[in-house]
Amino acid sequence: MACGACCAAFRVSFYWREASDATPGGVPVELAEDFNQRLRVMKGTCQNPVRCAALQGEIGVAVQCAIYDKRPSVCREFSMAWDDRGANPLCDTARAMHGLPAMSPDMPKINSDDHGRPNPLCPAA
Image (cartoon, rainbow, N blue to C red):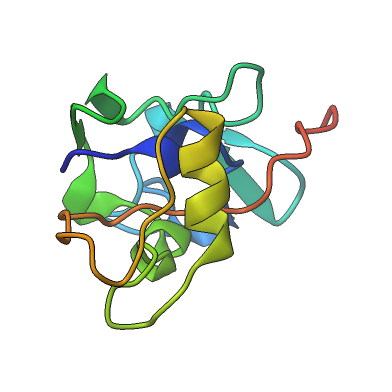
């Protein structure tokens, strides 16, 4: 994957039972932290600058998710702009935050599994 901008732009929150201490094969609990009674977040996504602890590599050049097969549902559901689901303003926003151009329908597709929830920085739990 070449982008990864959303992994360093948004809070990644997910239902606590997606973590490995509640679901075998789930999000590794050591890469998550409690957000509130029902939600956990990926470490690194509740701080400034934002960067998911599972993101490896250089944004816009070459990145990968260290827990791709165990990533939270919000990551699985997030789509790159102009994939088979069309426009995604959150993808465009994340890319702009990292100085990358917005995707367009005619751009070559990059392999992406990015995620996103807007990151008002996390309040204290």
